[in-house]
Length: 342
Image (cartoon, rainbow, N blue to C red; front, side):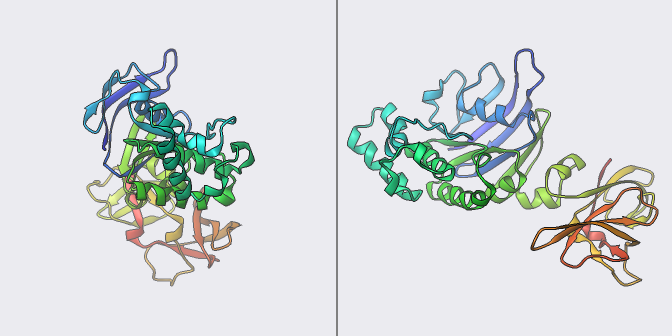
């Protein structure tokens, strides 16, 4: 089943938050992550899909069918909440079977299906227990099994890992992706966590101020952001204001950098994007885009280090990353710089 938003706008009464002219498509079996900061509109997109909000303009379709006026319980969407929302008085197996029970499935069939889903998430031995006796990660698996048990047309994930300790997020992230692929569920995930979005999704939509800024694969979103706003949302970067002074040459005030200026013309104001891992430490004297300067703050992350390097005559440091730290100079290959509109 596909999910499609066609020019959808929604405003909360008396508030500025909402969404404005959002057009999005989630293909059958695809996992699309909607990423943005608090108040960006990402949760509004999720709630409109589920039918928890009404009074929007535009068209929302599931499987090609307009869902305007279709109540929550008839939309066939499964939702996993950040705080699990399990019933404390029911056993784990009865929690998973709850959606089937509400759809009139007989007791034996819904129990068999619930046990099948618990086996998929590795919790069969906990079927008779109450949710309170499980860890946070186990409760989230139960919530996922419950959402998928009735084979929903669309699976909705509302920041599903936000309440978990960092130590188990990676494990559960991988499990969610494996289960989603196995079930072939068309999935919409909303999150503010870029690592979660980039590692889980087939495509990512970046939203801010209620508008979609870019929809792309994780790789293209990282390597080819369409604006500095998107670049700052996705990954770490240094953004240098500059002015095009010639073909493939940009003056960034403290140096002239060679980079692909594309359709920008001399005199135009631009921004030059640098990802920290593209910095070459202490390059040869004849290297292109070689910048002398000094290293300052160093942050150790185990497999890598991030550090600040202040080029000569620069007012602000550039963020660098790698196992080998620059001592006196750095260089950036022209193809590793991206020139964007100011």
